[in-house]
Length: 68
Image (tube, rainbow, N blue to C red; front, side):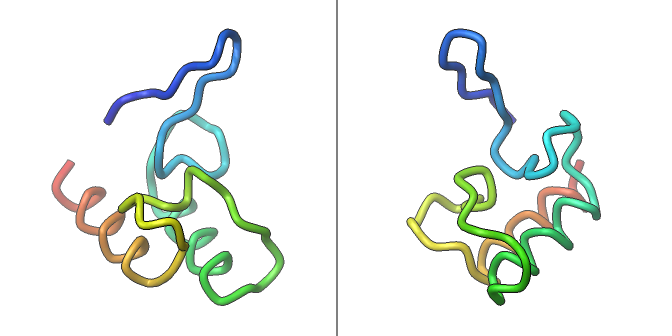
């Protein structure tokens, strides 16, 4: 998984808590984002790049975590 860089800003798609790991914590946060509970839209949460954060992103990220 690559990093997007903007000068000193670097983040990894799927790493919504910015710990440089993609794991269950990120999946749980993306679930909260997708149901509108406590978080606002987050670019890193849009794991499949379709412009919305929903359960498709959760499933894609879950598959990624399980395969890596």
